[in-house]
Length: 218
Image (cartoon, rainbow, N blue to C red):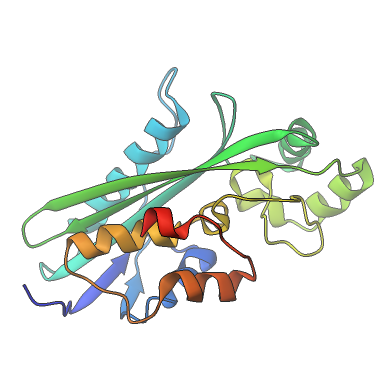
């Protein structure tokens, strides 16, 4: 099988996912998927992100040429089994950040890859334990006023330099940003698609984070 793919389609318009996918050195274009992201009753966080990632990939596959490969991802923040999506307004953002303050929660991201030509679908998921620092109420207020939390699951971005919500992370940082690159690399290799870069090296350099787990994945 040839390694060359005419085009990869990223089923997302997330600037963070686009920046991370650029590290692969492969041509792609973004085509965001519009799906219902409501959790099902009693749906577990891992099952939720896997279902949504697959749904996004299938939705976009129906719109693109047959020689494309679709990459879709979905990320959620979970406090126990409770799924914390994007806050509806400033008040909900404050409530989420207050809830997460000072204790450990999880971030789940699922990745789906769909080869349009034959319908091959591959799925993987990553979970990262995220220890939030004990930030002050005035820090919450200032961060919410910036508008940044409103399009983020759990109402925060781990990479936000001004708020800096997380300390001493040891798991996959890219997963918390929204695209676990080693998991994506592993899936792409199963379709004979190889990155044009050393992804663990590129990821750590781009995110300025020393990863201890990439050898276990790739």
